[in-house]
Image (cartoon, rainbow, N blue to C red; front, side, top):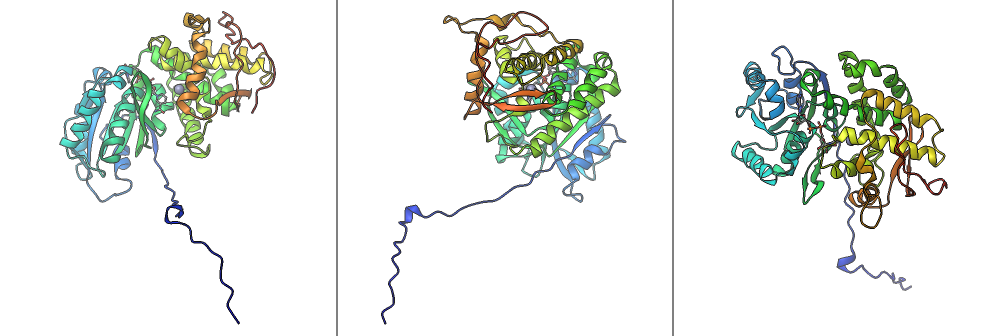
Amino acid sequence: MKEPTAQITPLPQFQRVHQQRFTIEYDYPVYFTERVFGIGNAAFCEALSRKEPNKRHRFVVFVDENVAAYRPDLVGDITAYAQHYAQKLELVATPELVPGGEPVKNDPQLVERLQRRLLDLGIDRHSYVVGIGGGAMLDLIGYVAGTSHRGVRHIRVPTTVLAQNDSGVGVKNGVNAFGVKNFLGTFAPPFAVLNDIEFLTALEPRDKIAGMAEAVKVALIRDAVFFAWLEAHADELVAFQPQAMAYMIRRCAELHMRQIAHGGDPFETGSARPLDYGHWVAHKLEILTHHALRHGEAVAIGLALDSRYSVQVGWLSGGEEVRICALLEKLGFRLWHPLLEKRHDDGNLAVLVGLREFREHLGGELTITLLRDIGVGAEVHEMHEGETPAKTTQSPMIASTETTAPVT
Ligand SMILES: NC(=O)c1ccc[n+]([C@@H]2O[C@H](COP(=O)([O-])OP(=O)(O)OC[C@H]3O[C@@H](n4cnc5c(N)ncnc54)[C@H](O)[C@@H]3O)[C@@H](O)[C@H]2O)c1
Ligand SMILES: [Zn+2]
């Protein structure tokens, strides 16, 4: 009997598919500590040694100039710390000062200078780059570390409220380029983060307050109990009472970390970014004001606006937005900025262009987080642009001409 012939046409070479797949696990500790470079505090040494305890670890340190100005002893402290822990640590050069604040993210020459410095110091993929500073300076240092040798280990020591409770504990780094904020950047989790509350005492009151907006934000989308705590302790926070500040920062950082680890999209490949609640407005206002508004100050306005909008589309119960605005105002935020009323020549409100830019930055579908309740954020894919925002500090809004529930 004749064997049946198999009718299989082999795939042409160019159509063969070999499926590649692997997963990488990330883990990094976030310490909440005091006097991080005090000789008696082993946390920093422990953080660098945690994967290879028997090795001597090379590290280089960059310090935000404005931090060093308030802590003239800091460079000496770091050097003494490295000497004390010399069995485990090798400081490869005297800690270097780098300018701080948003302008530091606008300087490509500085990026190149720092990358070259890592090359000259022989920083390899097993050495550490340590950044001590505000969120802007840490974004820069993380980017320099993340792009040198395709990624060098970096350690963050955040020194502002916002950097300790939000940006410093996350996985993003970046600099501004071609006039676009954070256009160049990396998703590169830090090797460790050390939050030292002592740094905050030197901060301008304005910078202490600004970071609290991120705590209100994450409470609004994820944790009603934390929101009630913020309301109950607003007076202590306004007075920068240390215990209240420490708890606010820790809880806020914890909620951000949980969202990154368990929200299903740590490197933001999808369209939803719940931690950016209120941020489409904020990003636009920061640009419109040429950064005269701090990020947190702009976020507070964005939170108020999107809370009001959540009420208008029938998600959040009426009155809750007043509660939200009352907390923000009690913390010291102004919930109005004249540029909210700026119009382009075509009559459109400039701030609403922020919606389109937000979508362009993320790619994909427009996805904005709104509130179903205090503590419960949910995503929508359209927003109705309507009339001029009403000018009131209690309830800024984009008035909607339609009241149809947004598509979820
Ligand atoms: N990577 C992320 O995930 C992420 C998230 C949110 C925000 N960010 C970025 O963070 C930046 C904002 O960070 P920020 O709010 O910390 O502001 P910032 O870094 O601009 O710091 C504000 C000012 O305070 C100074 N400063 C820092 N620490 C100080 C201290 N202890 N004492 C005195 N002065 C001090 C800084 O030099 C600066 O002049 C923005 O660039 C924003 O884009 C990044
Ligand atoms: Zn933010």
